[in-house]
Image 1 (cartoon, rainbow, N blue to C red):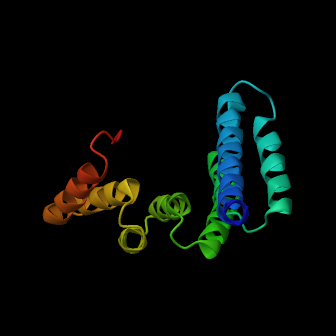
Image 2: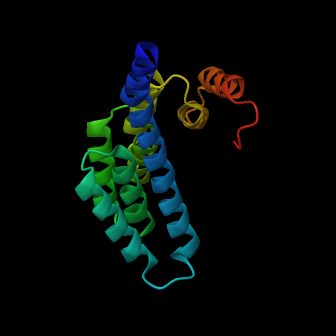
Amino acid sequence: MQARQRVMAGVSRYFYPTLWWAILAILVSGLFNLHEALQGAAKDANEWAVKSFEQGLKIEPQNPALLTELGKIFLTNGDKEKAREYFDRAVGVRPAYIEAQLGLAYLDNETGNADAVKSRLENLVKLAPFSVDARFELGRVYFNNKEYDKAREQFEAAVVLFPNHSN
């Protein structure tokens, strides 16, 4: 009986919290996908999505996924200042949060700050060396700067990491 209790204690300690995070990630992803699907078809879909994610932040104010999704919505709405605010908050919580860092790189690119984009993506690749998206975007920056050897290195790393990636 003691072995069973030890196993159940381990399950409670490690499995259930992991399961909770997995369920939360699925819900956040599903909510954003629903928002994307409704955005063009349903009136006030963006307002609904913002309210929904803000409700989520009341429960988990430090959730980088919720913060990033709000940043994406504001970016879609053209509110770059608000988008940057949410992306910055997400990165403040988890510096290697890839989607938030990519959102900030996009905003830096929009303002014409090529050095900030390059620096951000180089740092992101150091923080998250297995991120196909970070490597691909850094490769694009190098390619656009005519740093072809560096670009090729990043593109090859991206292909090795995920040969069937959409990019």
